[in-house]
Length: 267
Image 1 (cartoon, rainbow, N blue to C red):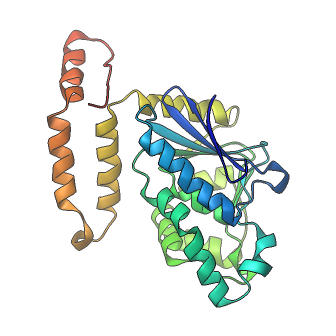
Image 2: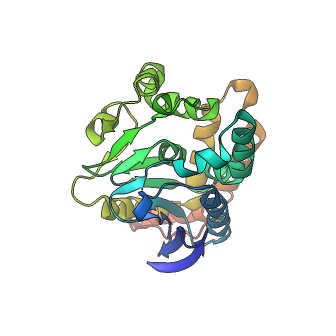
Image 3: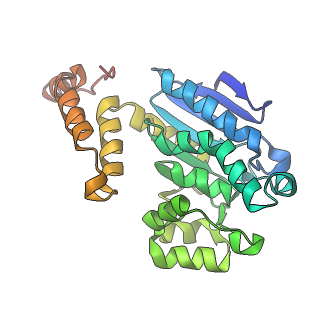
């Protein structure tokens, strides 16, 4: 992997494998628990990935093999989230990183090994696709911590697993293994042998397709999940026009006629 950058004092690393960007949560001694500084690092790294035209897909992963991320750094709670006001301030400070995850325009994949809990679930659910190893463990322990899961993340959870399974996860705070997570729709692909290799292979498959078409599909799916009155129809029409007028559209047709693999440039 070609190194691209280091953020949040090295606790968040960014790299690239060909046209695949990689963002690595790098606190293995803390099971990659996310502290406040790391949320800023997420925003910085995603800004770099968005500007890099060579990056077509981004993978989120955790260092060490034992955890994707075990969630928020609970050691910060006493100092930064002890009261309702402090918790609100914490949310405001970390909002940029969370917003970048939610609105990142390129397709993303969560490569999940080991623990994926709490705030780690937030990162995983914001990804477009989730691939899990045989030892992946999922959970949202808010009921054991006495805190409230925000509406935006509850909506995300419901969109993936449905309201009944969301109740089961939130009410019980129980942990789900990778097979259970796959069965309820939280995980898209199980990779019992090589989750990193399969994540990179999937990312490369996506990266080899027409970038504008993939981004248009991502945006269209996001709009389809919204209430009709909140849909950005003008942008949907613009995506249609841009795709039809693109050089990649012509390349796709020509490659089909010539019975060869297309070579897309994103133009």
